[in-house]
Image (tube, rainbow, N blue to C red; front, side, top):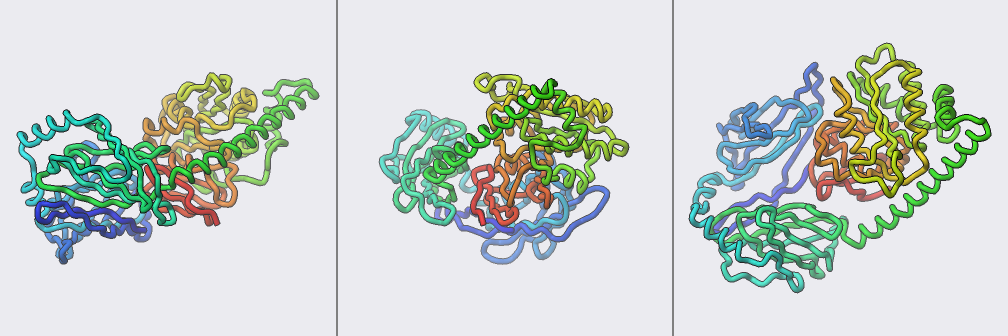
Length: 511
């Protein structure tokens, strides 16, 4: 796989940008008791040749050096690192660091292409403390928000305090997105610039140095970011951004809203049938559901999709914490989980369950992070498990379709102890209503997607798997490489293409 990055170099006191192809190649598979990823770090001179005898270090999130190596005569450093870990790569003769996530297995190759005197030039253009203070004082006097008429911002008076940025916004087909509202917000000073792309999809803005700016669209906050360092001299850059575009996003939102309405209608009809059957049999809903589990068959769902059994058989996850959606539409998969446990209870050690329904409250009372309907249980035998599953499922009343998956993961992992793997069994027909909570959760999650057809998976679940460095599992395949993917990369599932854009997965193309 490959992606483009911007490598900066300077000439005549100006910052120039060159688009360089960054290769990330996975080489074979390593099988070992302890998972090791073999890294190849290539250091190349932008003007030709290699950087030999240079130290390359892997740093943890605190900046502490974990391991290092020296490049050979061809500029290659070889490092064995733990699988599925995030590191920062620090290079002796390059002032800029880069974050990487090691793959689940095998090898990874990365190329760094830069100037030989990068550190010297970094020092040459560095501002003194007095110059930084002068710039900060100037910045404090500027308007909080600048509204640009059209696509090109007027050149400011003290041009040395700014970086001139040209942004070109294109859709997924590479066509320019015109009339797209773009807002740049400084993360430190909170100064913003608002503008609208021209027919070529272009905007030209001047952003104050000494801040990092988030790039925001109407429906996507913090889609990307651009850093404006404290540097002497005039500075310019050009960056191309791929984006769905507001009209396409609004079309998809409308389409998804109609789909959810149909799904909620189906769930309410399902609930009515169950209630009617309970009245006919003169039993409670919980008793009815328990009968269904004990018979290992659901009369109100497809029995052909055996994804839960298939995935749990294929993967040897020990010390599992299973977090399972038990809303009404998940009854067929609850039956599969019950059957799987019945067949494997003797060999499963330290197995724990968290079930969630999200229906303790009426729809208008549900708040993000406080929906409830989350139940924990260690393994206490098949009878106990089936009773709890029936109880949780019976709490449902055919309410709204989106579910509180993240709340269940966050609260469930606090309830459980001593687990090694988190396995989340989810409903592919139900979007995640509390996806905003994902930023507070960082444990890898193996997601079993129920109800997926023809490769279509709700992008919420792809994003959760990617952000947590977990995996996605369908009835046909285990998608583990998602953990090591980066912004801009694409993933194909049964002919459907997804792409990471603005820190989340987006459906690009259906077959």
